[in-house]
Image (tube, rainbow, N blue to C red; front, side, top):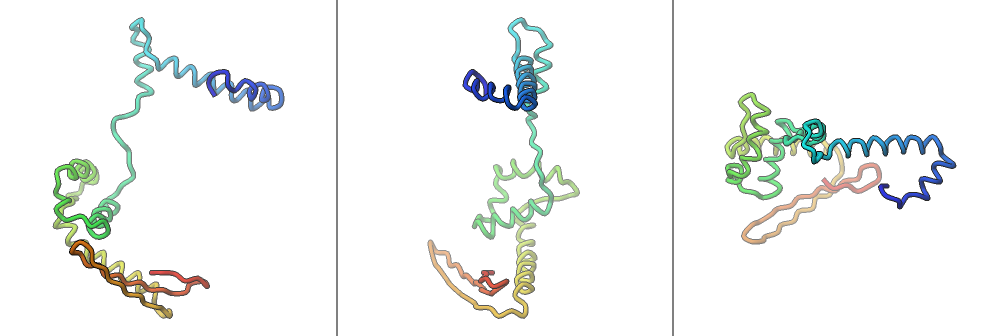
Length: 169
């Protein structure tokens, strides 16, 4: 804590937890030194500006993405979030996606045609996973349909017991 608000706590640490107090004081000094060095001086010396540059964050982001994550996200935009294929061609979306696509390289591209081809493949994989999970199990099917804003949605749920608990697939 900065300021005099922690005086009682510091006094307690100093009297009863001397090792921890020393550690806190060292960290406090380091933090204050960094702050003092990072503040540009009014005298115009170039040394403080070099120190400030050490602490300035990079303008570029480092994110953990790969080809599969990008493709799954684009498929999810269309299938789960209800976006149109046209959205994949929007200039704003391309501004976000193009640096990622370029970083992946290897002639990788994302466009509405690619995603249209991947959706049936993904659906087959999901059906296979569900079929494997439900194989040789007693299940209860629940089918529901809803219509809203000229859109019809068909829902199929499978209820089964796994480990004594009812699970939905």
